[in-house]
Image 1 (cartoon, rainbow, N blue to C red):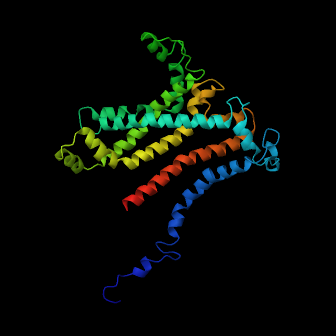
Image 2: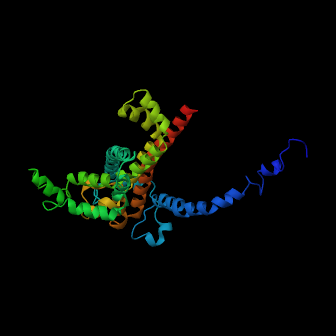
Image 3: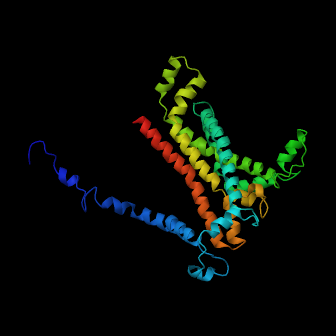
Length: 316
């Protein structure tokens, strides 16, 4: 062996069969890859396949032989307003409106909650845990409680409004006002998610940055603008993207909280998929609406990936 040669250097750097960078890592990720294919990839491909065929209660037994209809399921699903919950285009608009408003309102609440318990004070552990109560409650329970809270005249919301001199005949669970009742319960349920991520990011902010800002005479808002927010920007964007995707796919809240079928103002796209599949028994149309829902889900994910790449390019 020559002087300065690292022992087994060639063997450690092998990329062929059996090497450290060879096929052994592939075997390590193989179980997870198989689960992803079985649980996610195959159902998605099956849904895309069914979306192009007329699969209903009559052809379900032989759905591989169902008539091919091309994009008719997509056009009919988007434009049909005879469904109990309207068209899929209406569901897309309601879902986007619901997701955007939920994210825009819940995110500042989560940031504020994280800032209030970031520094040490008596009882901080209690408040840190108490903030998580809405997040750990099952969504079915939250929807049931929301249904009772917004009952017309007898719910706690109408009782509180009547004490303030506002008419109690609000009918939160019917008509256009149902959307705002659903939005309020969604915000209450999900704001601790942003709180958790931002709190983790604040724990990683170095004390030297705060000390430097104080030496420069920076007030609290200045430190928040130039120290805190830049340090947690990545987690903040991630929380907004994940929250938006969750809001877009929220089926339990409108399904449990309202009547059957729910009002058109809360007929989000997952509700449309459900009623087409299990009420109208039009599985081809339901699959087409499901494909549209996947496309809608990909929009915030694509924006996050583009923003992450842009941030990496600017920092490099």
